[in-house]
Image 1 (cartoon, rainbow, N blue to C red):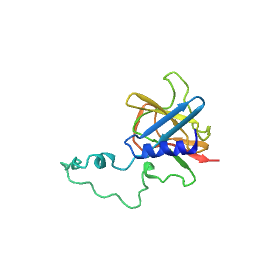
Image 2 (cartoon, rainbow, N blue to C red):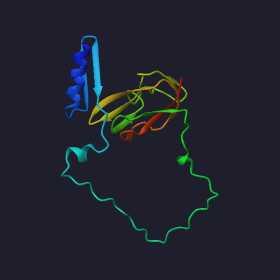
Image 3 (cartoon, rainbow, N blue to C red):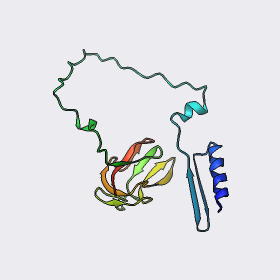
Length: 161
């Protein structure tokens, strides 16, 4: 496939509502994935108005504010600036292994190569292999097996090579 043909495929994806295109012919294989926009539904259907946020009013009075000397919760800690994050490219259910009885694709402490499959996201009954976009050592696996994930949610944190 020539560079002009590849450019033409990219333009076709950009000009359409298609989010992902995969082309295979013999040994050649090309996959084009368009990055999602922040609010695709509101842009695609401007006449649809998002529902107003729900506000709950507590029955009891608010608790006294916490003292400033208390440490921040562990969940609020800032991630290490040297770590790179591999994020979910779509919404779906994340699976760490290709089958329930199979070994996981990757474990904490293992080395991951760029392009190596790190898991699967099931979306609309389709199993999408998720490749690593960085190389390094896996420091943290941020989601559990069979856990729902959102677009852009951190799947792994990797210490780059």
